[in-house]
Every structure is written in structure tokens, then in C-alpha cells.
Length: 186
Image 1: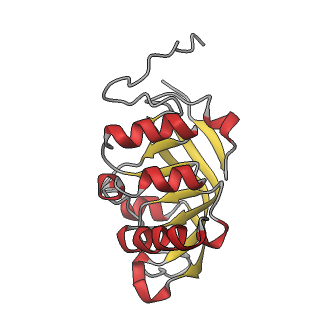
Image 2: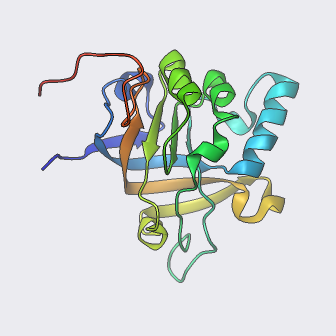
């Protein structure tokens, strides 16, 4: 059985470069939630200022909209959103400094190429497990765009949220390698 690799967020590019498609990871630390409407706003800020808003450079994005808190927990459920809906915005956000994205489902070849160009990675969380994944959130804090409701920009503190590497920092995917790299032997 493959052991999980613990990743503390935000993660550096050197650490992310060690990951390969299919690796199991457990995420600890800070990750930001952003879905469709948040991506539109982030791109607007990027176009106007040339930088990502709210110090998102070097950070991780979780394509999710947490439900309201449950008794004793900072969120109710938090399931990954279909990542391909963010594909049009992802290359620009990666080029601006986002280092890791987390969602569900496969991504476009453009996103795989953007991961290779920027040294970023895409992680896949299991869909349909939103209540379970909510148990890995220790804290949830509204950062911006509260008018978007569950699509607001939030910073979550994770305690071991499980995921898999869908695209590595060289552009290799679970479906097929974009760029051929030598695999680890250990």
C-alpha cells in the first residue's frame, strides 16, 4: 500500500517538484477556496493591477464552496468542484503565482502545459465525500467577496485532507504524460 506524502501549505516549488501523478498526499496548512465567480474577480484584479489580489502569490487554491458551519466545526461540508470549469482562468493564475490547485476531475492540456511552465501542480480530491472532507478543516476565515456566498474567497486551515496528484510540476497527468520524465525508483 502506498503511503501518503504530507504537504504543508503553502508549499514551495522544490517540494512540489517531488510529486508524481497518482501520488497520495495529505494536506496541512492554509488553502484558499475559489470557484467560478471568484476566478472572474481574481482575473479582473490581475488585469487591472498586474498582480493577484489578497496576497495569493505562492498560495494554493481549492475549487470548493464550503457549506455553513456545523456545530463544533468551522464548515459543514466541503466538496471539490469540477476543476475543468476553471480551465480558462488557470494558466493566467498559475503564471501570476498560484502554485497548487485542488478540485475534482481531469484538466485540459493547456492546464497541464501551464503546470509545466510554472512548476505548479493540480491535486484531485474525491468527489461525493464533502461531509467527510469537511472534517479535515480546522479553521475557515472569510478573506473577500462575501457577497458571493459559498463562492467567497476563504482561507481554510487543513489538517490532513487527502488528495492525489492529478498533474505534476512537469505537466505529466494521470491520463497521459505530456512531457516524459524519469520516474522515481524508490
